[in-house]
Image 1 (cartoon, rainbow, N blue to C red):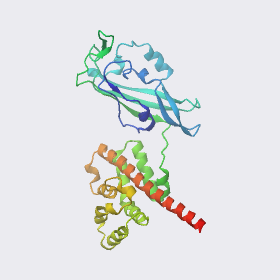
Image 2 (image 1 turned 180 degrees about the vertical axis):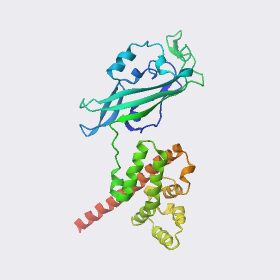
Image 3 (image 1 turned 30 degrees about the vertical axis):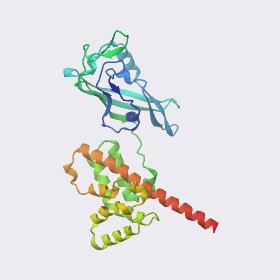
Image 4 (image 1 turned 180 degrees about the horizontal axis):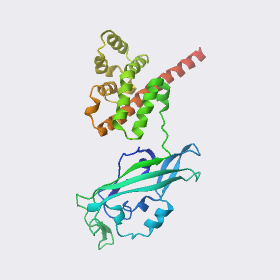
Length: 313
């Protein structure tokens, strides 16, 4: 049987032009996205501007679309959604409405396509066997299509939200780079987002290590490594040797996040594809947020304990 993925994550979180695999190994059933109305009624989580919090939204096809597609035969794939060679390929407008306030809505322009032809005959359909169970006719066909969806338009544009720990930690210049990097990620611009995150690494990585060296849970040898760097500017030696000296909360990652982040600055930006840059930017962002959050939480905890001790003296 084909595997259908729920659209909640896609509609809630995916940026423009990032493809989402909605169906793997397509088989003709009643939920196959070969008609725009199959997306009608999908629910997802989204930020409601009226209520200022995440609410449940429901995807709807506009009335004119319901009238047009509702008159199509349910047992056939409409010619209007197929290109030459019977490959699925169409773009359609949908409206996501907040189910709580019943007023706020977001418009999506979605592109739906397949990587292989969608058969219009009895292949890849279900048929009832002697026991009354429905079995796929051509389940072992390895060339069955996958169906993908991407956002090619969203209105209003999604708000760019910056992690609160990042906002508090970075200065104005780095904060601006971070915002621009996240904006590029939201629009699926790989080279642009990777360029901004590389700037952040080059400027902030040694500063983050200096702050980590001040934590009680860090080894005093970190300060020695930083002093040696200040004298020789051999920065790579710091990232190469820092891992066993880090707090246990960062050692728990199993790999050296600082060495991995630093290596991202050594490869030529334009030697990477747009897709590779996008993947690297997304992963750099995850690691940066974790390291900064760990540092911020540990510093905050120390401050709380010091205040408690002071009050008890």
